[in-house]
Image (cartoon, rainbow over all chains, first blue to last red; front, side, top):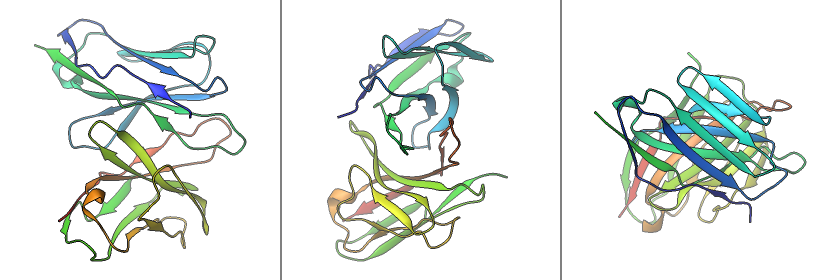
Length: 113
Length: 114
């Protein structure tokens, strides 16, 4: 069973702080990694994708990937109340012709004004 | 505007009454998928399609059917809905690039079966 694990939270951070969200995955051959943001009752929205080891920055968001440790994280700098949402980690498992995503159950982030 | 659309957005029905939830995308994506989302269980894949006339089961296919007669449309059919199919349903689509499998989601359909 290919699994993606996240702390369910809630993770509470004060406005302006850095929020750090973590994700581990079981399939060592996984190639593609994604972070989605989901507001309550809304659809998941893709905010970051990362495919190689290291950091990838996009505005206030930084995704970090360490394939050796099977670990991917998302940092949100200068957190805003509008960042309060559930963040889903998604992994594309290995395997020929595999285009599916396995999702973690999500971490709920609350940014306190 | 590039988007995935679903209809209806909300549906209340009774046990056993056949229903169809439509999904359409305008991005010429090959890959389309249906998920259900339930509290504590996360997103689970129901069915997916790699292209026209090519469909396959996901993790929770029981009680559902799909078809892919056109590239842009991927309807989800519940032939005899039961209360355990009450859930929030999402359709998603993706191109089949060599590296990137970024999936884009529709707005969701909240289904209640009584």
